[in-house]
Length: 347
Image 1: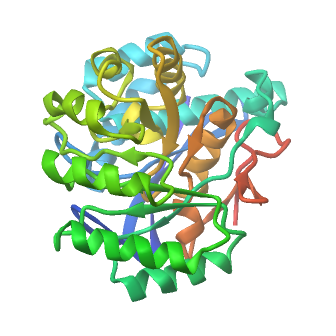
Image 2 (image 1 turned 30 degrees about the vertical axis):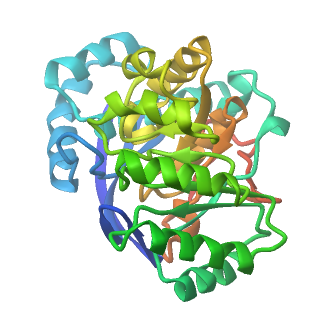
């Protein structure tokens, strides 16, 4: 296999602020794997969500180290390639790029889209949420207006955990609720920005505001407090930064209601599928999320999305210069097309 690695920078239409900081642009990595005249595409996106940050530089270095070792394999040698990841201690986002490219290659080889290879039903895809970062009430209201120009508002996800405290969180949510009266669904993501005491108060208050669920209420590393919060929360609790791969799920099963699977955290579609089945076997709900991903990564997850309860695959919709186009937005749903593999093209 021949592996080509190309960084590309994307810029957000609106900078996103969460409890850990603000992001306006990222440099991601486009990975192309060519074998027998067929080219599969994948993407590595940098992120920092507990543990060692995976930067563009570290991902680029890891992929450049892997490329020569991959030459002796074919896209059919997936088990051997997974062992190679372990040998090189490859960061999960770099693994995600390779694994996604191998899936894309296979789909193109056999002439079918991934959702069809997996036997999934696109009619089960739910609307993706549209994210509103931490903001003033006025700024959040303007963001609602901006999103309404992209698609019909069906599901908004609010980033809370403001450094100004839970009263600022409440003011922002009330402003969004007022600005989106026809909205059917609303969720909240604190990105670990609350203490246990504040999380208890907020979950109780948010339940009265029609919120569907709360994501990552407590900081990663504070999972010991999740049972106490679960016992007192009237809302379902999901974890993101506290759960990376399928191995993390069983120990969380008694303290949350669901997990957020992200392609970059999991390390590819192969592990994402493992995480889905592990979560289901533990009686948990499943949502998909994203970082500053382009249409490549979000389309890849869209192929798996009939298996998810909730979707947050909107990062590419907030880019001014996404080099790629993939799954189109149809009535608020990111629906993969009928083209082989991922069905992603270069703009």
